Image (cartoon, rainbow over all chains, first blue to last red; front, side, top):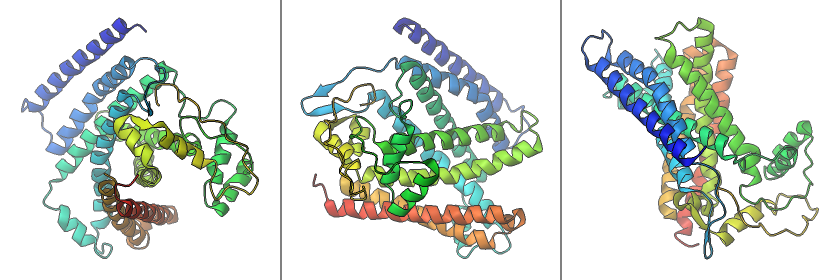
Length: 324
Length: 72
């Protein structure tokens, strides 16, 4: 798609979004709707979703194809500005959606005759905040995440950038290095059923670690897809008759996905905080090549690796593509 | 910047430890989970254990970052 056409798509999506937002606000503020604040917010959210997704797709298309290698002396670009901004936009969405989602769940579980010891403290802490504000922030966070998902999906689809997943035929090799980095017993337990060779020698990854390609990114994709789909079904329930069993399972899986995201965020922080160059890269886009190369090489040279020597490492090589 | 990131990591880990406690306690106490059956209770238990474990790992990394200061 040419640059001019991409801009036309973006302008059309933004114009449609602005028109949609004006209509939605006008309806909500007309004073003609009989709903309480909570239900009003739900309707605003569900009506805005098509426009949010459209703007997200348009922004993803605008980013275009993966670029070539960029460097400034010792610094190499690990992430393009669009990826850095998109990552932090998604972070804002999660920071809004996660605590409010957790409160909706825990608030319900704790509001019982005999809450868990200390549960009343938490209930009292949040009591001054009207419930519809919790939902409102949750919907805002959800909308930001939907925008982000649409944007990244459109970008990856059109850019041809597949660096975050193992290349075709390489899944077992990537999983083997990932399993080797786990605590020994856990790695062995995973290796058995998946028929992984924990002694398999692999060169250092070139852009993303084997942990990221084999486990982190695929599991992020699964939990975000799960929470997005189940969230959409839940949000639709007042505007479309959802079969009760589907609503029940959507609610259950939405909570399960939320817990998995809490665990994923902790794992993400555990991994990246311990590898500081990755934090620098996601903040600035640029990172000293030697520092990021050390991180990549360290992965295939861990203490937990088997005694069998890893063959001489080939240079991590130029990090090419848009995500560097 | 490292100490700030480490401190924020510890704060996030502490919040998650509190949540993990409520999950673990509710696995045995919550009436809703008890009514829904062993699967719901086991999910709360497993979720709480994993959140607690990973929160401790994040806290450990946070402490290391604070100790490291701004050294490279």
